[in-house]
Length: 335
Image (tube, rainbow, N blue to C red):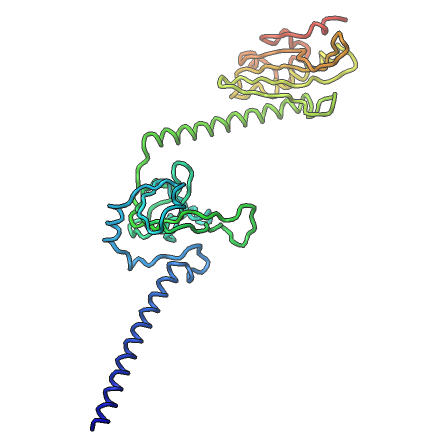
């Protein structure tokens, strides 16, 4: 009877241990599955996998927000993992493949602070999943060390390898309206970009017209004919260019007049030009026998004068009388 009881008890303990082992194995399996989702092992072609929001601890999030502090970017390398920190900046997609998506779509994105420093953000804030990209945010989370950023195409060889960036697990993410200072700064940047674009566009068009008449290369050393073109805030263009060589002094001068007149005809209707000034350069030999590239002709034309120029019959032989201001080198007046 004792033998039977002992066998029964042994079997009972085996069943109990087996059940515990099964529960532990199932728990480990669930834990491993969750870790796989967090680490991106089952993410397929996505750059990052979704996190397991079921395990978000709201009490932890509240504690992090209460205790989080700002840490300078350059100090993060010396910061212990798990440190509660605050990050502020603009949210960006993890790469430009999903730049049209909401940044929370794959639960990971980047934040760039006002100094241009970037962070990889792992989102644990459920309320953030529909926030649109490029918004200014403040997030509270824990520092997780450094991770390599994901490139748009990991198989594509580029000259810039992926960088290691500070990685933050964010538990609370708040949208923050732009400050008056940020709005003014963004407007100033936008205005400067538009201004630079306008300046470059006008200079490109003027350069094309000057090359068309004066040639792409000068006739002395076969280098660039245009020495410089400037465009100021009053919409005034200044052109410094080599004149063409010709068999005689008279033909050289008249050739310069013709090139000026034809350039004016091409640019007369340009609405972003109020004045055009030409400075024509030509190699001149001095008394000591040395040659230098000197300005030999100046001519400027304001908007009223430009409006009166006949595009089909520009004043090629009458530039001195057409220009609002005109000057030529004294040598041109000599026979």
